[in-house]
Image (cartoon, rainbow, N blue to C red; front, side):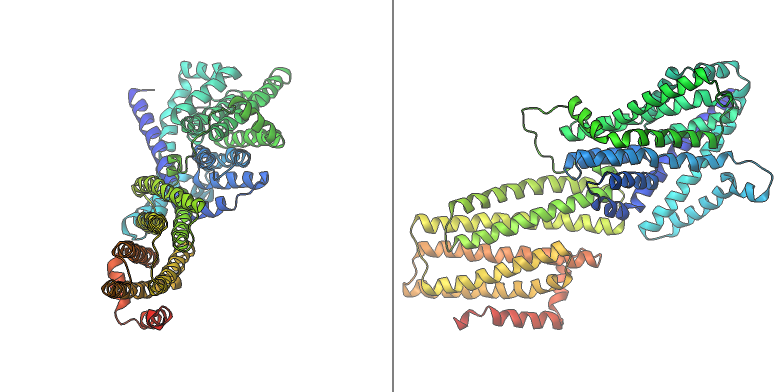
Length: 583
């Protein structure tokens, strides 16, 4: 083997790893919506979790990515430790799909049909189609499809390049002795574990082993222990991702490691006994592409069959190895590990913004109630909600900005923009709840009262604000366009109410029925209520714009008010409903 063969081998390996990485990332993006649906249906049922892990890993072609996601889910509270065990076991079987795809490179024969099945026969066509999709398509989905095809063509080309480069090793005595040494099961497991830990992909390390098998020097006796070790090496990625997480997330990574280590110990013992006592001739036979794929699948299936009934014991072992501490852990609402799968990270952000919307709206409505009847317990709840909203805005804003830098679909990109805008509005609504609360407290502490006329007018404005809060909240939570379109007409009515209430206040000041001190509180109240309606308008406009992939909120609001029959009819309806002149 010459130095040029070594350079060719390195180039082939780089192309292989690059193609696998590119294809995996594109598969994750392309399957993003499906991943969200699958994971949202996850239940306490172990079998459902197992099938979820198998399906997701088979789609994204990476058990490492799946287990890192699982660690992130457990850390974020999306998934329990018990749920994660079935998903991890399923991922171990799902990752064997890659070896079967790569085994196509080992097809041989002179038949035209068989030749067409060889990757080097059809990958150029896939590469051409992928290039056309990538360069000419305008939608992100078609571009991702093109990237998948190009990634697959690249990894198969790298695989073929590696196989061609190492073919000369068949006559190198040192290479022959290397694989004779790996017939020692312990050394084989260590070699597989170290290689996989370095490249952090069991699928890639199995592919490299398949490429080396073309030399004819890789026997099944050496390949099987290496395959077992590869399953242990792939746990490194999840273990690294568990640093800085909570106890249950660390336990999920430990479950992944213990599952593979225990399975390897049991099956390696059985393998060694069979090797010593029965000495089957198959172990000395040269391994093939398809043979390695079969061995990889059988090992992972056998591990799952053995340990699936004992999943509760794996959970107890993980809890024993990572015990509880007396110090309460901080609840981490968002985990950067989820960013490796942007659609799932976005779904988590969406859930948290929904929570933020709920407690912000409830806080404002509680503030309105405090104007009629003060309650110290409710006052503390309002203040807690405002502090929580501040925290949510900080973590969500930072996280969504990071998420926006990842390559996501057009729809997901629009959703990120929408969430970035509405979190500011919901945070400001919570701020206004504090302002209204402080006005209520000032009235109580100074024993001030508004005139009956002022109370009647304020009641009308509070009712209108309460309704616009409900409409904007329902529009956002349910993505309800009809509710969203009802918000702006009501907001315009509230603007008019503010002017009328201000004029009425000036009249009361002139005739001496209202004190100047109470007037200051009155002015603060109607300003906060009107600005709350403005934020509701912004939220509704974001919902409408996101549905139309247009994030120009101000233009949308202008268009809505111009020559829009629906807007005109709803404005008339709300103007009549909240007519203070009828009081």
